[in-house]
Amino acid sequence: MKHKEFLGSLDQQRIEQAIADAESLTSGEIRVHVQPKVVGAEIRVVAEKTFERLGMTKTALRNGVLLFIASEDRKFVILGDKGIDDKVPPGFWDDALVKLTVRFKEGQFTEGIIEAVAAAGEHLSRHFPPIEGDVNELSDKIDVSDD
Image (cartoon, rainbow, N blue to C red):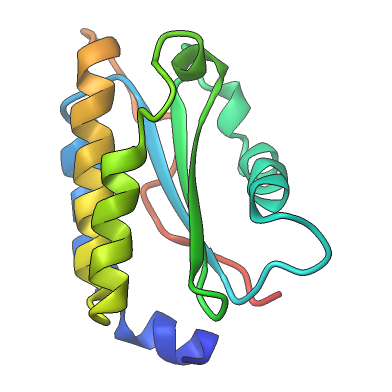
């Protein structure tokens, strides 16, 4: 599936609402980034650069999460910032990745992203519960790159 078709198949409003709902459970910040392919590097390396570019290392508690999707490659990764990685065990995101894998194989891209975002919010709530006066530090809009 081409990148534009993939983007056209997404219900961006529902995904952005899922991000807002997940963030209501936690002081953490969740972003979704979609690009066509990963060229010249491992997906994790490209995702880490995207994490930096999106300013996700600048949250007060260093508790940002990025769901990075390479649509044409059908690859994805979930990254947590230092504040999360310092507190959580290995495999912390595995169930969210399983949900995404299953839904993507079925062609249910919006549902997969929503389920992965919801799982991320639930996981974050255990280590980063909501705090009084919490502000939304990062946009809930899907970040899209065409390269």
